[in-house]
Image 1 (cartoon, one colour):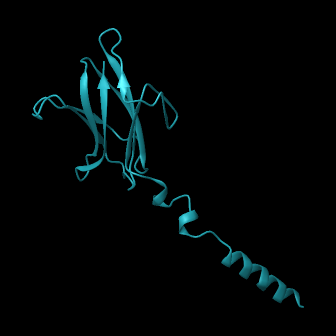
Image 2 (cartoon, one colour):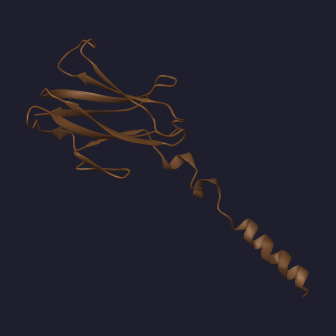
Amino acid sequence: MSNYIKILIILLVFIFSGCDESDSPTSTDQFTNKLTLGTGMDGFTITGETTNFNLTGGSVTIFWRLESSADMAGSNVNIVIHDLSSSSTANDISFTFTNPQSYGHIMLSSFALTNSGSYKATGILVNGNLTVASKDFFVH
């Protein structure tokens, strides 16, 4: 068999054995719409993942990680805190976070609360006013 045919066969094997779109690291199906809360942060991971927090010294810091199935495209993120004991949205607290990059599916930060109660946190992409995910939590 000539060297040209051997090279052609090897090239065809590489072409047809390559990864498909679902194996690609840029594939969006590896991301889901999810809001995670916890007591700390380590890189792109929330530590002490929980929905129960304790006031210490009159406040609690809650760390969050918002994951979006769609690219955030640099959109700022609002984390809206709704007091579940109130039917009114007039008492909602909104924290706006500037996205540090122009692409990506994950953003992390933290906010502080000073009152105990039952709450719902909702992660919203400012561009397009797109609600990504919500999570109920308690502050004791």
